[in-house]
Length: 156
Image (tube, rainbow, N blue to C red; front, side, top):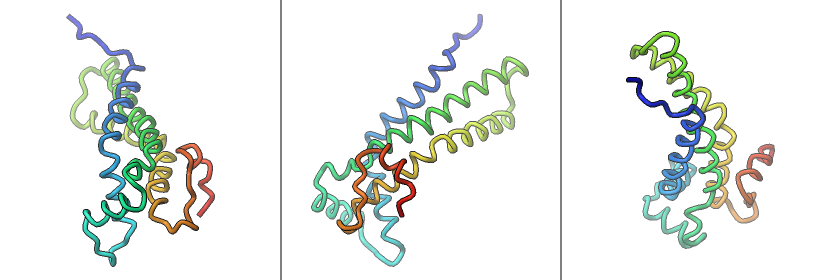
């Protein structure tokens, strides 16, 4: 008996949705990590100090600054990577049978590359949006959402 197949399009949708759900929970920690990285190696602040700074300057909602970019990243990168991998895997199985470890590694590398290319604009927007709150008020870009951040890439 053949094992039931998930439609190819569903792999893209499920991959993106699962990534978006995870990003919704992890985003505040990712924001704190990005802000700490942007401080540079010479500035030594504890994680708790960075958390307190964000809460004081931006309020609780400040921890979700850039969430639209995070969700867009997952909708593009994770959906593309996951959907592409399972589509390639189905294609491989249909033509060559069960793939070896090396074949799966190659398929995963291709899928990861496709996801990286597709998700790159959202990744850049995510970093820019999460970093914006750390800038002095006069230098902030005050992005409205991920689309605004993507189309304003030429600003430095």
